[in-house]
Length: 260
Image 1 (cartoon, rainbow, N blue to C red):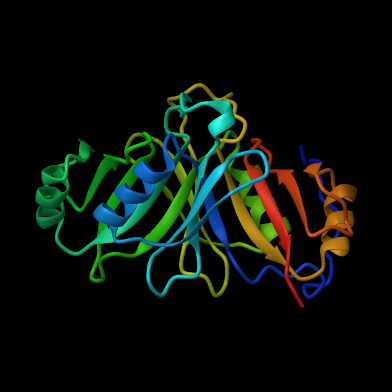
Image 2 (cartoon, rainbow, N blue to C red):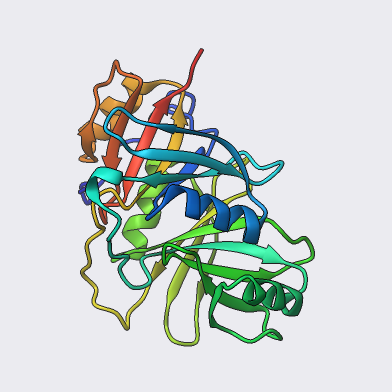
């Protein structure tokens, strides 16, 4: 966990974040997941591979967008895993909710909430991740990625302090959900943090379920800054190509040294 009182900010150029690289999601079947996102949401498969421990991966990208989805089929761990309630969801824009409803339902997509006339609706992908559809003037956009948090102020402070996000908006829903929308300057995909008072406040993020990845210009400075301020670094060294760390709720962060 991070300390309650954070140390002074380093010079902004020392740990500059200039990209939101990808969101990695565990998949039950790589080929099935790739097919679902390409058919239903317009993603394009950029490449695929298999790691040294047998994890099957694929990179899915929407045209013109830098932030991508990494599908991660952890074959050795099996294909049966749980996604805790309201833990995460992805949001995409549509211009015509009725047309989107008819097309997705015809494709066999599970429509879970909202009507074809609502500005917002929810579906599930083939792995059980929740997806929000938002009506907007421009469709087919990857709008945001939401994480459930146990302490909204603490998480906002963490992502602002250590990753350079800026709070664009805070709202409260009719059922009491407190939401902070964060932006990383220069990146179109936003991060939403949500505190849900009607759910158990304490929850755990399953190992290897997901991670967020960011490029780093100066890994040694970032590593020592994070370590000195109590950020949990779970893997990697300051002189290496990447490190893994955890945010205050245990969501995994992959920090990748930018090639020079």
